Length: 116
Image (cartoon, rainbow, N blue to C red; front, side, top):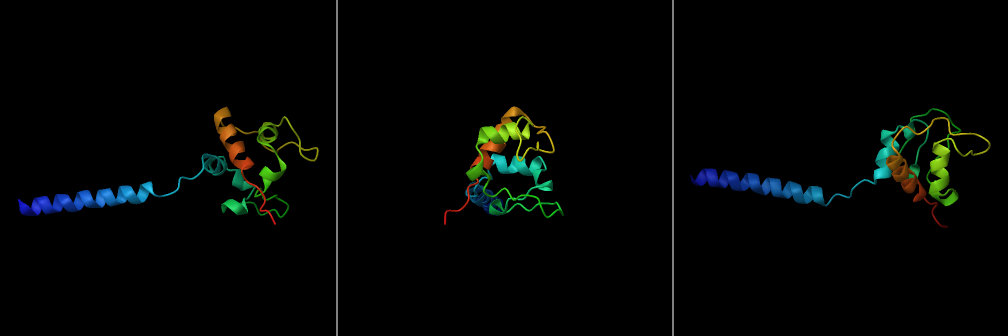
């Protein structure tokens, strides 16, 4: 009986420690997850967020400071091909929900260039 109690105590302690460790981990921003899940990193990288591009092209812009140059409402329209950058539409239309698009562009808007 004593061994069963000791075994249960060890199991409960391990579960509790796992829960405490997991709760202390910072949560990834929803926009960052959407960026990756939407495969935006097939063309774009975000060095400041440790996201590498999968593209082999050399002229693909890094989006690390996009929030310093563009507002979320512009980015939303651009991803829906309602706005242009350098007289060009975004190559693909965003396929997610409106709520997901809002989360994505709000996160992109937080990506500011480091002040010098």
